Image (cartoon, rainbow, N blue to C red):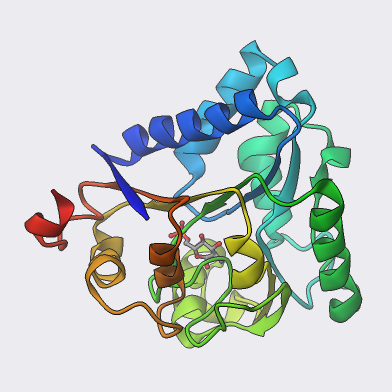
Length: 246
Ligand code: GLP
């Protein structure tokens, strides 16, 4: 895993945009899995601005949702697909037909197999953009997830329910289960970009960079991947030992 430092959240958005655009220029028909959450919001804004000036650049790209809440209705306000649409695909003018999204009410075994098949049919993921949960989760792969895990339904960890409460009001508003691309699925992507921004991520970023690699910290799998980049801003890196950073 390679580290790229950003000044702050806005700078992280610009640097992440450059990585995404670089992949698109190399392979216009790329398949990308994109995280939701607050971290990628500036990146989405930057990408939407590029898409408005150069819509052809995005025309052949296809997108897959990284994760979704399970057991909610298709039009639930908490649907992560709606988050992706609001922050990125709508302002970028991306055709809904170009998005492969989890259907939260479908039979989860069939649905997860459908997503895996769609990725395989495309020839694999070209880029995965991940956020970092405060407990080290990537997608909804919670601590203890196998590094070989595939796309599946999972129970959300208590810490994820706590952190996701800020999106929806209270912990009671957070669905208890999720659907997520598996760690094994994500590891097969040609490029992986992990984003971390803000002081609230400093402790988990320090653990990620300095602690042991293992299934107790799902994101640590990326330390085994030479094609993975951690793009983090100064606040998120503030607890990392200086020697390791340089
Ligand atoms: C959430 C999502 C992840 C997201 C992460 C970080 O629970 N399941 O996909 O990347 O946690 O969220 P944020 O960027 O809001 O800190």
